[in-house]
Length: 495
Picture 1 (cartoon, rainbow, N blue to C red):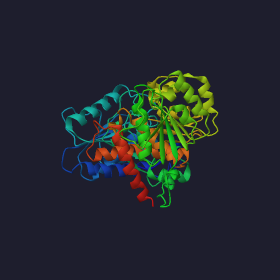
Picture 2 (cartoon, rainbow, N blue to C red; picture 1 turned 60 degrees about the vertical axis):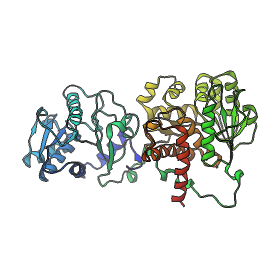
Picture 3 (cartoon, one colour; picture 1 turned 180 degrees about the horizontal axis):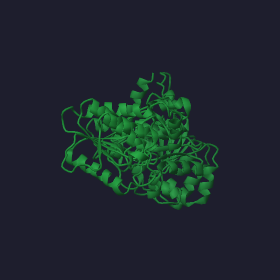
Picture 4 (tube, one colour; picture 1 turned 135 degrees about the vertical axis):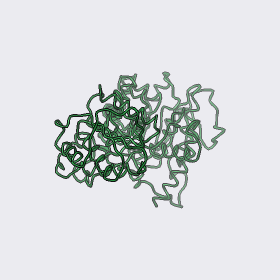
């Protein structure tokens, strides 16, 4: 998958600029090639469902090419040939001239080796309805009944290619071939569950040479320039003293998880400031951590500070947060720190007026509180929500979830597409805070530290699952251990 991501207006502009370049034929050829890998000639027939627009034209090109390669192909055309756009009308004429014919409905008695979804792609601006909704439901039923792959062209029909939402019904593809450039909705929210295996073909275009991307996908190359092996002549002071403030009664574990993660990612010294007066005087599992009263920790010379894991929402917590925000040092806010910001206008004003933007790492419910809306509204437009939080609070934001969205105070955005469902577990956000904190303490700039921390978090979880640990039962502490291993591998690769 390419790292450049584009929204619909830019994609339409690219398509329009190359209107005479036979993009539909290139798209159909790339899709036919992948379809040929998914089925065996001479087996059950291929079902191609073609819609009323250019996505249907792509599907007709695929159908014609597969027939030329001696695959048995049945085409269901859900449109009006007389009303097709010019390129799709040309694809229809070529299909018919080559001996193809289309039917109006899927034969109920037939079985299929592959279904190709060419109903709508990215062109649908409303939930599918009527006949089209019924066809999408039938495609999903066939995939389950016949256990056959479903190849979506450009975007599974019914999925919002910008937001990753499914406002009605959508094709649940096993494979998606997207054209020209990546789309954010394929990588976040419901997108990954509906796209299956995702592949990009640029159709011989070079979009970044014509239009700057709207956003980017996070990859190792995004922050590789900041990865450097350590010099031999160093000491613990070379890698920063960092602190985590939190640890209210019954929530000390969250602070320990964040602090341990920071230690394992190389921070030179890690302090934990625990609110609970009954908190232990040391961490028996990680005695390298140094424990302080929160007020004393906030008066210490630190390279970076995280506030929020296990913080609670007491008056003491609010006062500690107010002090933390006023400090002129790299600052990460998570969990209850975000809830306090959402509920106290003075904290909002202090946060927005900081000389250096803070880092906020909300999950959808916390993001909803920051924007005074429901978590469901955040999930309905994850990209828009992350960008609005960054703008409103003049901060850098990681909106956690499937396809974490990182948005910065200057309006830039990225989407992270690694990680797995095992990360839906308590404490994972605390570990992310600790990973980012460690990089801040080692003098990484805020935005690369956030991007690297988010990507490392997902990569560590993926490594564990690949090794047979999870996804069910994966724990946050295990991810912190794996992150250390992945990060050292990155350092070795980038030498």
